Length: 506
Image 1 (tube, rainbow, N blue to C red):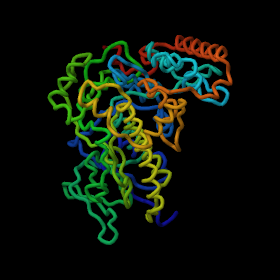
Image 2 (cartoon, one colour; image 1 turned 180 degrees about the horizontal axis):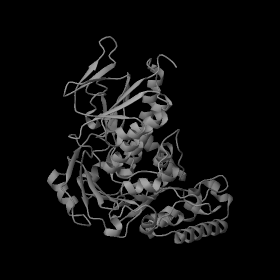
Image 3 (tube, rainbow, N blue to C red; image 1 turned 180 degrees about the vertical axis):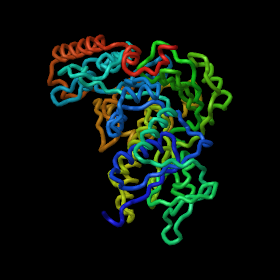
Image 4 (cartoon, rainbow, N blue to C red; image 1 turned 45 degrees about the vertical axis):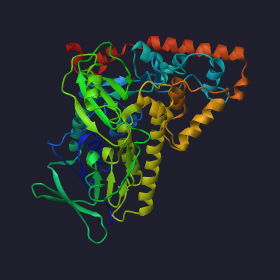
């Protein structure tokens, strides 16, 4: 064993970020590799509104060896096949951003090229007919993929909705079962080494001092170590994403149990709707420059589908990220690293991604600067590309009915995003750059859904005649419709496989 091996890890903060980190490290770092401790205080609440995920969480679950039915049951979860956007491109519009591909790629070209050739004058909603997930959303159906050969049923991409508090509790149980030590307490001070500025220890309010080799800051927006002690700095993106407030409130669940998240554009932001087995998660993300807190509360409470189950909870944030995610012997994971509004359900993914990158470049006590620099570089790239995808939703609109929408419609946008839009406007082409999270299918769903028009379709699509193109697209559409019809209802699937009991009692 190397004498410079990391022997003590301290995770500062619980919640989803802390316990996802603890669960992963305790699973991967086996055979008494090191001691892992997590310190948190029951008195400090967690944000706990990140209840929707994207399919990459399946990789996380498999890494941890999670039994999916147990996981959904314990977190009172539901399944998710995509996101519906209402009133974004213009009022009255609605479209789906589904998981998984549209149709089939043909002749070395993406399906999108042939779709645009055939449907250049049709409404954005027509695209949904070529996605199994979108049709299943429309029909409130769900199932896991099965071995069905070339059928779309063999490749069903999905994610989850769940109760964030129950999720953290579930992961805590798994982590403690693998040896993670939890300490209850509030941190009063952080001590740095006088010679190199590295973090030496944290001191709790009761005087206990906890030393470690590696510190992982999961303390939320405060960034207790990464910002409070190390002064990493922050890149503020409010000028592109002006929403800086959120209100969350649960309400009674409603039927049917939809297998997707809904995002509805409001006067000064957007409202989320997340169906769980025991309640509905609701929230309003808005800009304080365009709406007061009282106006936002009225908007949210006036648009609930059921009886409120609690008082509204307020959240303030600044969109952006730390200038250094990893500084010296401290890595920020979760909200301490940065914040991007949950429009595309990326909050938990960024936690998962941060953990994965840390494991790829896991240090010893020497903390090689080249590894730290690469971690910061690739994490910055990921944040920026997700940022651009979210900006697309706001900027690609014809809405000018409120000052908020007029601002985001006319604001300048990052060069990367502008280039991506211009490339699409010419021949409908979209390319996935390096390791950016969202692929060409996702960009196509939003660009098409929000009425960005390409002047021409890809000329190579003419390798297939118009008649043959129409025939193939009809066959794809019919196959998807037949496959969706085979799927059980979302609620029936949960009742038969992973019910928490709330649906039967509701």
